[in-house]
Length: 380
Image (cartoon, one colour):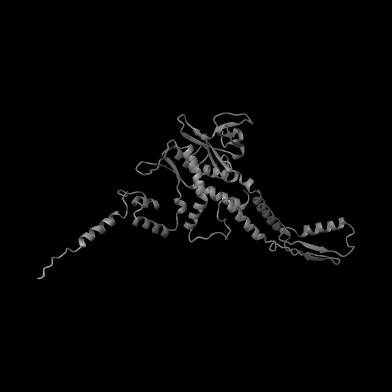
């Protein structure tokens, strides 16, 4: 995670998952879906446990999922079975397995959780068995459907090459960009290997490093120096680092990482965010909401939905045009349109904005139509 592209990808995805509200909606027979503010809503959006805010909790679990393949949280329940707390379980101190056709999580209490809140006291080295129904388990890509795969194990070579590139850049800076050189000495100048080694060590000590940048070199007794014809540009060092950023972006489902200009371009920020939600975040929305509905919902007619309005907001002109189209086409009510602009609902705002306009137009057509005149000609 010390690699800049990895830190950027993890921070971006986990931060957005953490900051978006998770709405709990109730399906009614008439098709309406009012919001419900129950214990599940409070745990996910307010206070999951005594130590963390909802943002810290969700961000931490997403980091576990992205880096270790599995995010787990113990579901604390009251005597009625209602969830009253979510305790994160550290991924490196927990194992998930199938026993007798049932899914279990084995965790050590002393180092396996962020809090001392499991329902039993264990001795060092003992495991506590938690059934899957009491664990909120969000997995990364899974091969067997039981636990997620560790991204470092999957792409060890990609991270290794990126790490090597970073170390190579550090060495280049440490040497102050001095290219490799060959020093040619006259025949018989150095009688043995010890003398030549002492000379080279002294030369490198005097000229390597940032502190020695710009110092003049001196050769004597007919010695000459030539630069090796291999440089960072010849080795395509910068192009290689750009390619490594692209590979890491692909591993995390991002189309590009900051500093990489080779990806898809978009006309506006809102268009780019839409692509980011559809191509990257949507799979995480589905993983989270299905686990929440399966483990935390007391009734079958409730569903969890991520509210993406904040991320989808564009410039004021685009929002105004979007609101106008919704109003003209009769898609949203007045209060729904006001909600887009974070305005409070008003009395009578449950009507569609275009309803009165349509009625007025019909009345005008009826009143402006001229009555037919009787034909008073002699022939009639």
